[in-house]
Image (cartoon, rainbow over all chains, first blue to last red; front, side):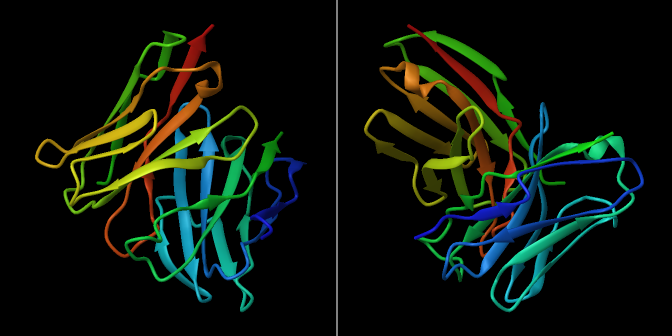
Length: 116
Length: 112
């Protein structure tokens, strides 16, 4: 099985711009989560989607948004970029529904965003 | 709010020694506690997990213990090897959700 695929892998933007990141989950996985990883802060939960519906949302401003398509692929968007948005954005997919043997998150390699 | 504290932030051990990483969670409703290993430049990968109905789980050189009363859980690595060098993250989640609250990570260095 192919793993979780994220594009683009690297991107550089300037303050005020917006960015869209894409994630293709493992085939058959219907849950897609997004995390922001920064040095010293670890992985911070952004949101989780299942069957095109946002099930959970983290404590991020409204500039961060996402969506999921009918084929389970997901995108996240950050508008009006700030310097502090520079981070590695990780997507993870999981089988569903959540059960005793379905807790594992399968991460992609991430999209590294640099905001200048 | 939901929070997971992880200590230490860095840990250096001699090859062959044991390493212990500790986490404390705040939400008593949490019932699933995974540990992820992230090697430099790579994606995080699950190495072991434990559910709240179990007190300890072992997988070869790795073990995790859980104290629900104290809301503590720990990762134990015995006979450490250089390839164990990585950043380790603990996490906690509640039933029926893939919303994981991660600790801030422990950078483990195994010195040959």
